[in-house]
Image (tube, rainbow, N blue to C red; front, side, top):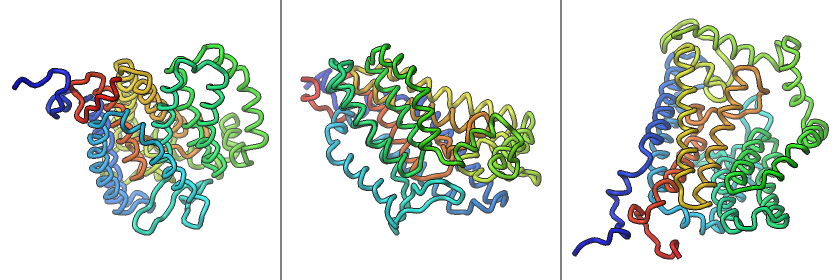
Length: 386
């Protein structure tokens, strides 16, 4: 019997249509991350890295790819409809960062990790995923009334909950990521230009309020030294100054992966891993990494244009916002044009939770990209089409 052209649920068509280029690009980045962490450990470049770091990164890479393909195979509408299960779970996990189970990295201003005994997690990464799905689902339900003040206010409250929680916890870098996700997703859904203009007009007041009443002396100091370099070389500027030295030491083609003259930078396996990339592979290697990261962002943006509905488009733009903001802030920190706010470089910086979380985000993008044609849906649901 001839199979129905529109309800073919075989996996062959699905796997032929997934965004192979996007998956290859992110896998190349995370594979290089494992190599860099292994080099730091084997060459004993910094005592901040041990054998567990590169092994966890390798395991997370494998789990991430598997998770990405599983999520990509499921229609994103199905995932969004179960918000009442994963949203409370994500909020509950994040609430544990205010308990004795929480701990922070040495030198960090916040305590955003939890130790459950059998595993260590960064709940803010899980909260990003939950927000990505719930906010896109919320937008899709009110997209025709998006620019009405009441609905926009409710969307603002929705976004303010995770943003406020991470800010209260002290993780201002992640709060910025949530803010970027909110703006990009609303813009993609058709937010009126007048609201954007009004928001831009209010920014000076918001900046003044945050500077005066939210930031502490350390946060304000990190911004001041950007405008007055050399005022605190042994304190707030120390890490960034070493990062600049590492960037310069790589010259054009780098020192390679076996050298005795690496510049050791605090957190070079995490927030400052780009400094080690430039040190090992030089200017050419650093530019190549920037190009790959830019291609990933552009590919996600292109996929958002191919999605069939508002939910798919806003999911893609939310992931775009995460990656673009992370890349911009992290590279800005290393280049000393932005303050140090503890934002890692996606797919490169050490961190199992962040690695798996980013792969799941890519899985959602591929799901939105792939499930725009009914015959290629692995788990087809006729109710979705009604």
